Length: 182
Image (tube, rainbow, N blue to C red):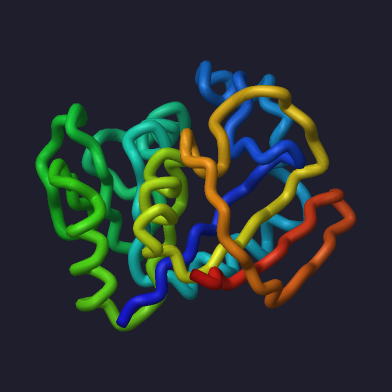
């Protein structure tokens, strides 16, 4: 069975995107895209066999030059959840227009490795509500953004977590890993 890991950057006030990122202005974002934490993140990506993204997360790659149907991360099978995006699925990127919950339940049963939930606060909230998330990896940025995309979207979760590991970086980022106790 595959392990579903929500691995995401977050502000201290629990937002995965600030207003600048939502507006498509990477230059104004307070999130740290450089620093000693980035090398570890790139190394972590090698462990994932598949990546799940909501529409907004996938479209963020368009700001960096990606085109619809192209993978954001080479060598990882992409599953993009959107009812509005239009592109042909291919070997690297599959567009999923159906309900995410039954699709991901089936995917977890079929996959043997690690599945990365890259983003989509609403998608994360839905998966948490259905107890489909196995681990949470937070790259906590030393920022307060006030508003933006919440870690679990509109969900207001109440669940116990068990701390597995914590690592701090000179950039000020703290990486914490948890398992869910449903």
